[in-house]
Image (cartoon, rainbow, N blue to C red; front, side):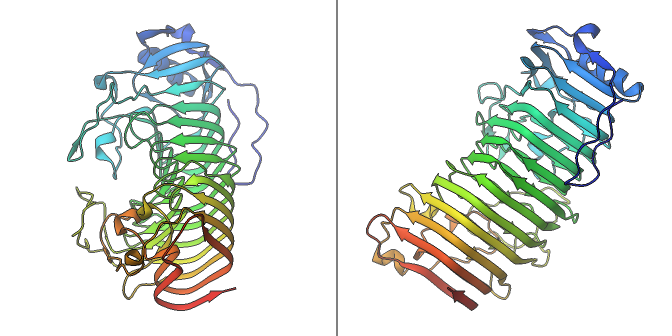
Length: 452
């Protein structure tokens, strides 16, 4: 039986006792890249769990499978050279599992667990969803086609991902819901073959450590979420490289309960577009005690976006994401954003689209973002802003989907701060490499701004 996992971050894993090994090949799995091996792999998992736990070994080779369900005290060990391949047929994915509240078109997944404890995916091998647009077409925005996630664990405690590669999900890659005491160490995520290719989505999770990982995604690389009133909290990300077409680290957009006690440090978020760090609370939740430090950002857009909004979504009934102007609040009272510390950031912003550049910190009328400190920040921008853009009025859009470039070109070259209270800039250098007509910093309805 595998040893118990640590119950809190910062503890070392217990020394493992010898574990019984269940080789999927011994139970009939065939590594030919064609045969559907779901029954054999599931039989190995169930037999392992029935003995009290141990290791289910996927040996070297290419094993095709549909949905498999991980059980308590089971380690799924993918040997070096082993590749678990997602089936290309939707009928091979289970439907009688808990789906994704924020993304109902992606209810299916390849590896699933629910109410499990002490589960692991390790070993040096790969889980490959084969989720390209050719295999799993996107469909229209109004009716996305079903596209399986790679992994979803719901209401689990004690989860370890270590020394493993996840690649080519058809939608999100690793979706953890209401799961606690999670460690992801030396994990590689390589998933840019389809739309909505998130890396780690952490919905209502507590006590999560992500370290020494390499994450390259089409959508958000690391994305704490909150679709219920359960706060996502005690998250640590460190010594990790992430790049994305949309965000390296993003709290949101679902933010019903909110986020608390999050640390991101010693990371390289280079090669990220559409905003690198996004801290969002738009559905009534609280976002507080966020500490981000020692981050390198080369060749990026929009280094920092902090937003308190009033979408007010409950996530208890079907909804539509409103990307266009004209969204109306959905009823949940406005939340809070406060106590954010961002320090030791060095960034080079690139690109020609000025709407995707600059720091934006914004609350809404009557609800300011509070207590924000930026310290030891060096950001180089391309420049190119005009006198007309310097006079531009930025729309409020209090309920619209929270994306910085939706607000258009900012009237500042470096930082635009609106509806905020007690903001400090300490040793913040914001420069341009070309001609620029906009002011370095623009403040609107800010109470207590200090620059040192």
